[in-house]
Structures are given as C-alpha cells and as structure tokens.
Length: 186
Image 1 (tube, rainbow, N blue to C red):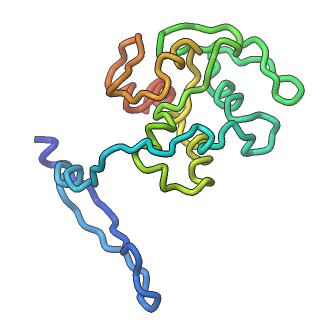
Image 2 (cartoon, rainbow, N blue to C red):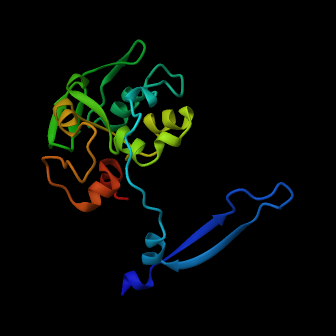
C-alpha cells in the first residue's frame, strides 16, 4: 500500500533548448514504480578504463590533508594525533566491511563504496576529467569513501555489490546508506 502511495516529483529540463527559448522547468508527479521503470538501462562497458582516469587523493581544501587523511579524520572512533603536513599517528578506526578495529592508520585503505571501475562501466567514461576527479575525491557525501582494512579492500577490488559483499553481514539499510550516515541515525 505504501509503495502504491509513494510518488516521485521529478523536474524535467529540456536537453538542449533553442537559444531563443526561455529556460523553463516542468514538474510532474508519478508513482515510484513508474519513475524507476523510466530510468535508462544500458549494458556496462569497461572499454578504455584505467584507474588513472580518476585523479584522486588530492588536497581539495588546501589544508595539508589529502582525501584519505580527511576520511580517516572523519571516521576515527578515537582521533589520531595530527602533526606536520597532516601526518596521522595513533587513533582507532572500525572497518565495517569486516568488523575489525584498527589501531593506527597504517592498516587501513580508503575505499570507494562504488568503485571507479563500476562508475566507468555505468557512464563515467563520458564524464570530464574534472567530474571524475570530483567523484574520486568525494568528501561531500559521507557514504562515498570509507576507511576499511587493507585486506577487505583488496578482496573487494573493483567488484560491485552483485559480485562481492563484505564478510560482515549488514542490514540493507547500512549497505544503502553507508556506515556513517547509518550510525548518525539518518
């Protein structure tokens, strides 16, 4: 019943209006099932993919900490000591992929919840270099990048959720919303 009542409001923008046309948006409402059915589906294509196409681990805010350090600082259970040009020592993290607690940052990797190769397969091959960099270093969505044990990250590699799941079983809510947003109660 709730699914039948769920609706999605979608804003539709004209793909390429004539230069003389005034930019306008139309809104329409339709059932969620219809909105999902209307999503385009295309086969995945990894042709031309290289990890280097996604420039990553930059210092976007120029505070001396690269993206991995920013994620480690955000996800620390017990914060590390930060010295010099963002050298992290000590600290404690929880790797939700394998339910391990890790002391110190050395045993951790920063993982893209959706691997860049999967993004490429699904259309990132058509993105600009700037958009791929923004994806690779996405600190705006706490679900995009996660600190996990290096071992768990190597097991996952470039596989998507249909091919690999963490050893630790988690609820579908956690997998859909990510560890930080779930633990924050959102």
